[in-house]
Image (cartoon, rainbow, N blue to C red; front, side):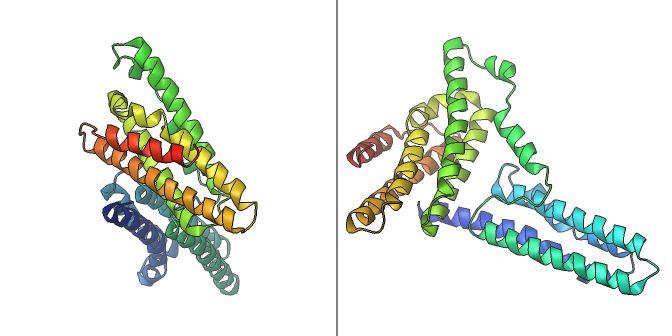
Amino acid sequence: MTEVQLEQNQEEKKWARRAHLSTILTYPMALLPFPFFISSLGAMVYPFVMWLSRNKSSYSAKQSLEAMYLQALLSLGFFGFGTKFGDDRVLLVFSYVFMAFLHVIFLGIAIYRTTIGKEHHYPFSFFPLLFSSNKTKENWNELKKKFEDKVEFTEYKTQMDKLDGFRVQTEKESKFLTDTSLQSLCNEYLHSLSDLRVRLAEDPLSYRKAKQFLNYFPETVSKILNQYNKVSLEGNSPESEKRKTELNSLLSEVIKTTEQVRNKLKADETLNLDVEITAMKKNIEFGGY
């Protein structure tokens, strides 16, 4: 990936971490002359403002929603314990300390996962279902009207379904990666692929520009990851290490091309990636795919 792309991805992770860390404002806001649960709700303002200011399909925006959800849970917990043990200061303090302890545990996990770029959801969060619904359920009848050619629409729908399948498969394969740097790289690829998916859903006709990419790369990445995991199981022999290095290099190049496609589509530019994609195909074929 280019330095600019890496910087953008690091920026997304940074804002995601900030959203989760903002929930700590619950405790200094407790000094305000309001009931504790009201002060806790006030700490929800920061992640809410962040969500408003970010691209709604971005990693940081989705994590901002999760931070708001955690803050709502904390407020509900403080309200419940405050109502239940309002007359018993010992139990009230104990319950509040217990809530703070759970908060620290949940927050630590969230910070770790956002640092490595993984999607994070708090317990009982409904956002995974919401995001999944937004990504995979299109109004196909409405989208069909944008295509004059029914054959092209059928091809578009088929490719979108395939893209979802390969994305899920790639996510599964990435969980078995033992190389943390490669796992991080794979997470970046999945973010790029998700953004590309959103773009293609918002502007179906842009599919024409990305057709060559869609016909080849998502499936190829899934196969390369599968092969990498198989080689990893063979042990640490010089031959297997050499093969893993080759596969790592291939994945880096494929992810770079994915970023180019996504950025071109975002800028609504005409794709001039045929030469790059053809070259990448040759490199991948040379690697045995």
